[in-house]
Length: 353
Image (cartoon, rainbow, N blue to C red; front, side, top):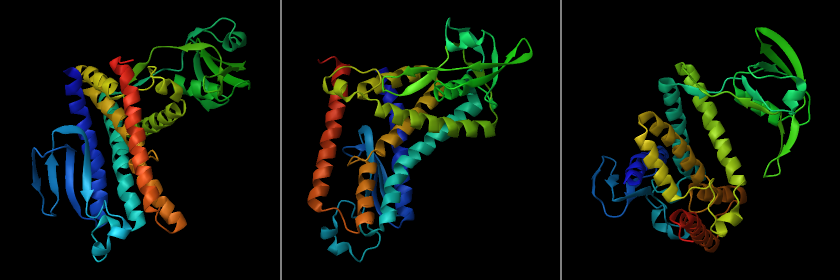
């Protein structure tokens, strides 16, 4: 029950914002929006606005859609709409791409705003650039670093948090790094040579063998909250793409449960857990989910927004629409792949293997 309540609290607002992005881009492009629906199925209640758009709420809240005039017609079927400029099929290609892109963009912007609000109200957890422990015989130990050392600079680059240290070290495997250390109120310089470490994805990174202290809650001004909200939104997006590139597709096909891949059941359970923790954790999780929703919809797979965008980019590049047969085939293939992926990640969560 907690999982159901959690997903119903978190998902519909994210869907609403996503569709609102499509809606505003459509009306700004002069395209008539016939229906704005949150959920699928029969209408529970709704109303028609002055533009003639029917806004409605339906029972199955795991999705939503904006229905635009002439959206489902092909160019060969649109003869009767050729004189009507307010149909999607007759909109400029750039307008179509803008309409499609605006849904994911709205989710990305919402994620940024929620994270910024979270930081301004709650503060941001940061790990100080202080060494908690130095592992024996590590690069840091050989260089003379000790616990309680404060890392002020690396190669004359100012260090604010332990994440700064991690990023610089990882990018400089085998290269000399000069650490400016504050120890007992005195500054000292140490030359450290990060050891090379091979990750599972065959990327080579540097490590020096130190452990961070526990994160602390740091209060932020409004401008700092906006800055870190934007910065962390980018970081979350980059982590998402990095995670996507490291997915072990064989484990999915063999129905092995992968802790880094979460299906509908896993998301629902996590949503229920977050709701119990209070408003601030809920807002941050909504930000995380909103960014993920935006990025997923930008994947170049029909019928996702990104798939449609690629099809229109093809039309711009080659000066002609994608053949109807190929377009239809790609749409069906995309739907099948998405349904198959959802089934494959859900089966392990249900324990049906």
